[in-house]
Every structure is written in structure tokens, then in C-alpha cells.
Length: 274
Image (cartoon, helix red, strand yellow):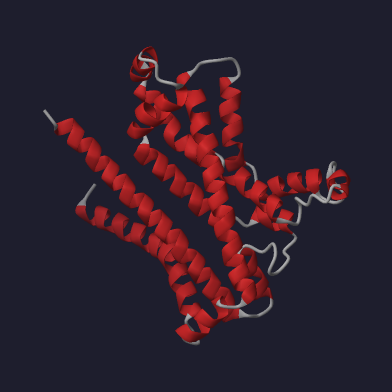
């Protein structure tokens, strides 16, 4: 490839990146600060906005915690053992990536809604899942489940089982092997998966929108509150919330990139060590 072709390809790449990846956040920040930083901060101090931020953080924290635990266990099973229907299990774990989140929300609504299969029975017991925080948590868990497993399973498979079998012969329990032998080698991949899960949970809209009921101050997460504000022609408030959500997501992705760089540096150091 000639020098002019390389420069042309590089210029085209940067143009695409600028239009698709750089321009949208810049426009969001610009609109958020259109009336000044004071107006943007004041809109975020609104009770409904604070409720949306709080609910988003709580649902994200719970989703990350639960999916990290079950993601690690699922990765262990599919990477360390060969058994019938293993491929089917892997396909099920990856299902949320290919299925529309709206479909997931509708499934939870079908099961737990007031007209759903178990809705009336749960209502008689005064248990509320649909149009309440538990439904939002279930929707978020579904869409974020694969990320930890997909991130660490290949590394666990690459590790083999020699060190773990040696630890087992020395009397170590399953959780001691997992904590002291397996996870230390996979810590960077695990952190990367956790951060991916975090970013996905904060920005989830489709499944949560269906199952939450969009109740301001109660079941609206940050993405849902942005839609409510924008539909209500509260442009500055909508873009201020969007800017905050974008900053949170970019910070998460930036931290993941930093951790991946440290992981590569650590691997290079091991490879060059005598």
C-alpha cells in the first residue's frame, strides 16, 4: 500500500471515529451546558433526578455483585469440565447478547406482571416484582450476565488444571483453589469483565423500560429519566443527565482500558523474565 493510500485510510478512519464516537458526547456536553453549569447542576439536584441516579447506582452495584459471583462459577464450569450439552450451556449464557433487551423485559412482565402467570399470586402475598425495583434488577441481571463469563472463561481454559489439581491433593477446598490459585492469574480479565458489566448495567434502557413502569421518582433509572425529561421538553435537564451518564460510562471504559494495558505490561514482563 502506497503512502498516500495509508494516509487516506487513516484520515477516513479518524473521520468515522470523529462523527460516530467523538461528536455525540461533545454535543451532549454542549447542550447540557447551554444555560451554564449552574443550570445543569440544579437540574441534577431535582428529587426525581436524584432518585434516578440513586436507583441506577444501586441496581448497577447489585447486578455487578451477583453476576460476578455467578459469572465466575459459570466460567469455571465451562472451562474446566467437558460434559453433555456443554455447548448448549455456553449458548444460553451468551443468549442475552443476541436477544433484544425489550424481549427480556416482556418475559419478566409475562411472568410477574399483574396479568402475568404469577402476578396475581404474588400480589396476594404483597410481593411486587414488575413495576418495582426487583423487576429492574432482574432485567439488568439478564442483559449483563454474559460479560464476566465471556471475559474470564478463555483465560481459565488456557490455565489448565495442573496447579488446581496439585492444590487439591494438598487438601485445599474448592473456594481456596478458586481464590488462591485460579483467580490471581485471571484478576485482570475478571476486573475487565466487571467493568464491562458495570457500563452495561448503567446504560440499560430497553428491558428496564418495559418492566419498570416508568414511574418518576420510584422506578426510573437514569436512561429512563432522560427520556422522560426530553419528552417533557426539558432539554437542558435531559442533556445534563445524559452528560452525567456518559461521563460515568467513559470513566468505566477508561479504567478498563488502563487495566488491560497493565495486564499486557505484566504479561510482557513475565515473558522477558529469565
